[in-house]
Image (cartoon, rainbow, N blue to C red):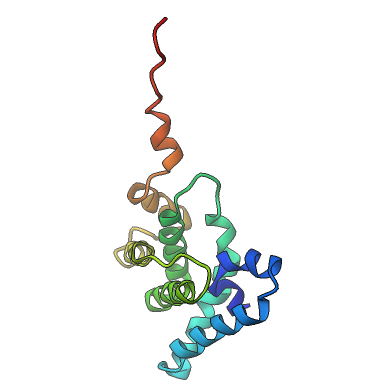
Length: 156
């Protein structure tokens, strides 16, 4: 389960390609590398984020929302349940996995993860809905944002 969430964007590509074994090895390498520097307690706590990420991901996988909103909201939701450090560590692991696989690693994704964790830390993410709403104020819905800018129709 931990490997599946580590690279959620990879999962469909793994199943449809014949590189499942190689890709899973890459993800496991990243996870082992990161957790080798932590204590047993930290590793156990990181499992909290991995477990809850699988349960919470459907709440943020919504049509029309930005990728950065998904990172922010999920990190805030995870921080509520597992703490700031574990939530952010999972974001780092995901981006590291993106660097060794077909994913798209971006610093902006880590910034969005950090914004979500920060919302929880400063008390602006006390509920799941608060997390989502606050992240939406930081990362507005691109479809709604563009809906107000309709092209003008040419005059006849």
